[in-house]
Image (cartoon, rainbow, N blue to C red):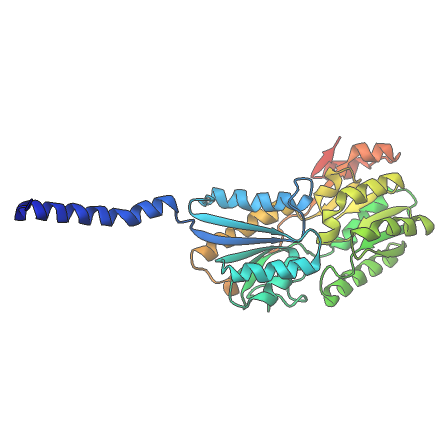
Length: 338
């Protein structure tokens, strides 16, 4: 049957409308996921790992800033489970995905990320000394593709030792648990020197106890017992941070009053902690992610330092150790866990 010219024209227009609708249906079936962010963590994905709180904090802050996973944002989380080799592999894999930004948890993750790319912006949560670790040219003007936040501040190590001496009567022997390869040789040397000078100034005998990995913790605490350590200070390190639960348990078994570098140490049962709040730093860092997604250059965003260091005291642990916390110290603590 022959169709009239008018009928053929209507069929043609209808056909165009149907064809035009195909891409729309396809988009509906495979929605645009928005910007891609890769999160590189040296820790584990389990909720019991302290680093998981940091990851959750930055994601929550990004949500508050208007980003929603599955709508205008895709987040690819990568966990190295404490392996330096795995961190390098994951960094290389993330770069191949060509994310808009790589968020690195700590200097430990930032260094392999920077080795993998000199162009993709890298925003780092909780750097040690970003200049000494050769991540940035200066704090004020990073000058490269890396920026973020740092946890170091003036006299932090000295303050931790002073607080321990105030709480432990007659303290003379302190063990310092440290991770020799946590940061660059220059940074680690600086932290170690500051610790040794402060110990001498306070009249404390210092025992440096290395732990290259979680498998070294048992022998580390055995060495502390052999040298009759009277208290413990846990140095900053992503690896040690992830092992806080085990460290606290070993300190409890050895009846060692302990000082951690982050509040999670006291939260898990350690005696005290003094340092920057990791969750606050993560939220602070998320603001830089937002700025870079909106066009800012990491080279021009100054590395931000903590505005506050918090003292957390676990009073329950103090009582178990037979220690009486001076009232003045309790009054100045940011939080007392009872």
